[in-house]
Image (cartoon, rainbow over all chains, first blue to last red; front, side, top):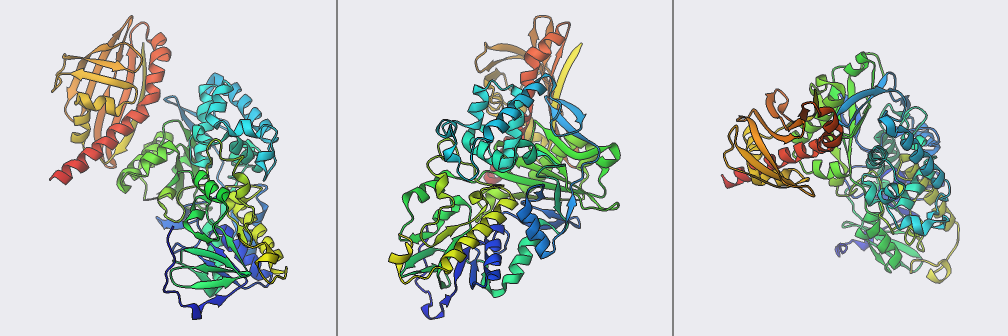
Length: 473
Length: 147
């Protein structure tokens, strides 16, 4: 925790209704909605760009999403927001067969569940069981599930072993887990996994492309949504401004960066849970908040993009979707732009144990290994990329990992309630605080909209001092 | 009959650095999580023997069958009715050094030992290739620091 600069120019302090900390999708959505409500807003972002866990780049003349990419059915809030700011969508390429490299052999398949031999029945059994158990975990309140304590006391990995899941089922769930949470099955609370699955509407909705959460992506890129929201904020948005201190006193909240202090009537903190404790709160947050922040670390997920002069795999009736049990890229998608003459783009996910090793390698070695993974699935032509870029979310100082928080066993029942429960005039946003589609861009937008409504309620509630408002204590 | 599985990936490590790890007994256990110890005379020669001890299994004798510096290395372990061998290959490509580790079982009982023995070894090949090349890169960086 860093103390605020004492060189704050108090005379320059501005007064706003709400300060939003964090200009990711959640914080920007909250600020956007609050301005629509007529509130005066200031947004502080620690990084030099907006978007948080959405980011974009151009490589080989093609736009790529470095963070959150896909949307699907049921993700109504991100879709509505994108429509509102004029960012359009197009379907993920799914024509042709998928490919799997499994146990040293290559196979083609159609649909979501890859052919893993005699274990296929067991994979179905495990999926059905997970979906059934997930439905018993209330969205937004996992601690009230009937077996919450038991499920939180074990990991997804230990549950798989206890359920006598086959090696193939365990390995497939591990691949799904690396993409979803950026961690290994033994590292995540089973209760959290079930809660997450329920929030996403089941494993199929979570993992499928057609009809699932990977069904579409944005023509202009997901980051463009954040950029357009930020443009609407004008000079209310300050980049390169990490918030050091939040003080609640006398019915107001003072938010300090190294350069300024802004007085507000309430504050929305829209940063990942593990980063909340980088801000000094006065009075101090309740202990459960600090402990939650320590016990809800971000996962580790990286993405690698290779650009080709054309999507050569489509010539061979391949969709570009691949699954590999070797890594480092263990799931791939065709992430190319729409259009008959558009270049080809392969996206590979590198997560969990693979990312921890891969993230430490020099760029040239990461490129070599990612292209090797693509070639392993789609043939040697995949080595001839005209462009390459990767994004290591674990190396981002103001994000600290991705795609979302991955609480370990024992971290959900005692601490999940701290995610979104306001502390006086301090409100919380960020995808982890959502009660639907947590971990997804849709969850970020939902959480931002909920926090905006909470702030509006506080703003319309007259007060004179802390005693009346129950402010931060 | 021959049962075979292999894993290949590209690396920016040099052929010399990879070759050094293939032929240094102390590096084998570092690069293979399943291996506890490897013992053989340095430098290895075709026909020379050594001993490997895996975690939880008895020590096994092996014989080097191929040693082409910076190109290929192979050794074999005798099984009842089959021969278990471990072909290693590397070749320079326009995109980097291609490194392949394989497990091969030949002989009348290859069809039995493949699923029984070979499958588990094959599952570990990707991790071993990654460790060999990652540690080769680390060796190169250390050598560069030492001038």
